[in-house]
Image (cartoon, rainbow, N blue to C red; front, side, top):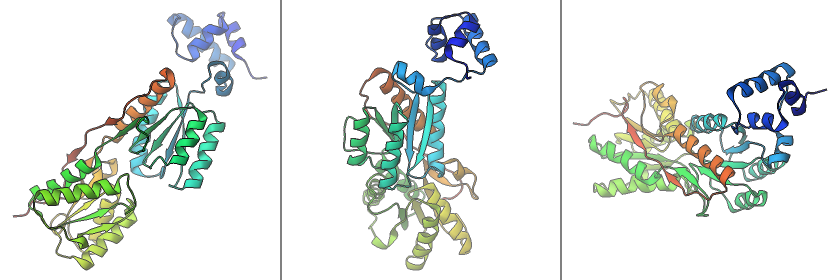
Length: 334
């Protein structure tokens, strides 16, 4: 028979309430008492039951996190920040890979409801009305990270995508480039696609560089589309001197395609990415990029979520700063 919290209390010679306080890091006990309780837990092999604890304190200390592509470098960096902070506060994280599919997302929301999670962090996707209504019905908080919503009461953590894209293109212009192509995300992507295109346009206009529609192509933020769209650009506008890719994965796709085409980076073509994932510093040559503080964004989202859970507060959104990390994929034109 599995040991119970009552067994732990008896072995440690303390009350059940004290064991519960130790398990939940609530304080109000000495280090010696904490040591006795933890020793009893180890000796008995006691495993706290999250559902049973939830019946008592109305919480399971579990957070659901939804990503459209959990295997991407972008998602893994954000997840690291979320988990690091949550773990430090004794919260567990349940990760769901939605593949940006509406039906799958709704299925996962139902699963998280059954698991009685205390809150949901929604990442890298638009919080559609049906998702919002499903979460509202669960009566738990939701926090967005690198995501957006029409609901002004939903807390978020993100950068200013338009400004960051404008800064990326201005960086290229400052290096003497004027024939600058862009590989954007999807045309219908209002979250990151449209604002980054707006930033590209803003930089060109600011420096009185005419926009050429052939210089703007659309991918899906993933490696393969970077390869494909760079080859398209080389067929249609081979005169370009620089490419701004709206994600590091697409920028790395550009590096790969350039190599296959016999082009040297940055001697023949300059490339700047967007996101600042760890992989950008591992490729050859190391990628110049607009960096989002992804782990920090995950940490802030996790911190905001736990504060919402524990206080019931409605917190504001957070805009974090981006930066340009110059490495070896952009050259200065004479």
